[in-house]
Image 1: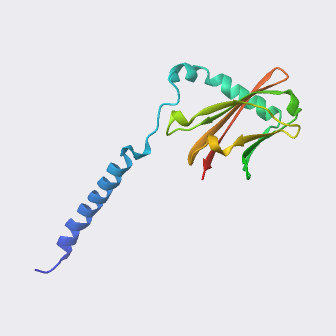
Image 2 (image 1 turned 180 degrees about the vertical axis):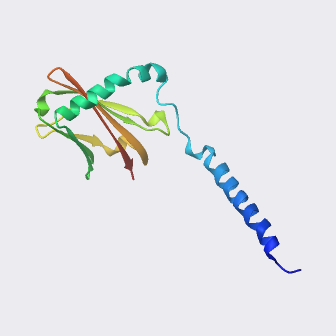
Image 3 (image 1 turned 30 degrees about the vertical axis):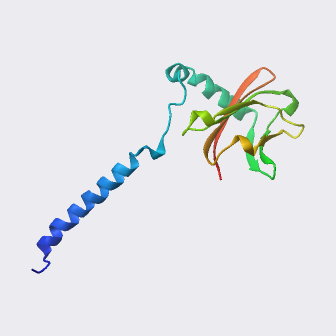
Length: 149
């Protein structure tokens, strides 16, 4: 029996369907588990406009957030049109794949606007860094996605 164009006309679509089905099944596997961001997700959704306003406030202060790693761990640097001593707030590391790996810390910037964070608090993977702070009565917010290796 020879392989003809008729056989190819059947074999190619069948191969495509098998490959797409395999990719779909693998992508739906539980290996990429993500959890709902918070238990009170819908209440937080209503407060999202406040977060947008706080992000605009951070931009008005020309705030720049830098994330670097060093021999001790990581450094968060906040710079803008304000003195680091006037900054109070919280730093949150949010891990989409497991809420047990989330943690919060108060912001404690040094005179250069830098805060050191221990590498022991992180595991390899994706995190979203969320920073909420207050400067002279103005609430600000920034976030940044990072990948720990």
